[in-house]
Length: 91
Image 1 (tube, rainbow, N blue to C red):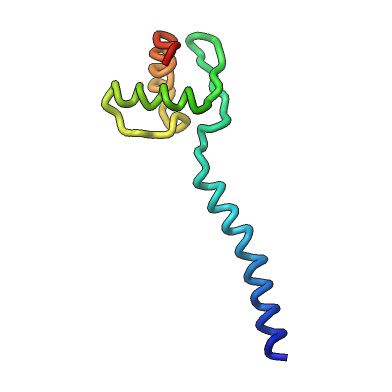
Image 2: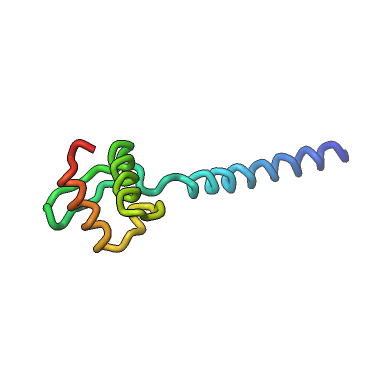
């Protein structure tokens, strides 16, 4: 009967571990990915994809800024980025 208790314990541990592991994985997910942002000054929307992320990282480098998720920037800095982005559509 000892084997049955160990098996039951392992099954319960696995049942609790899967949701915790899944949450941790989702938490590390890039929050900007698959988002759509509204550019108030230009009255248009921007889909955040790999191309937009690359342009954003260029803007950060050009402005000597450390990486921060776009969604965590304040409104003023987001608008500065969109103004730059409209001036550099090919990036």
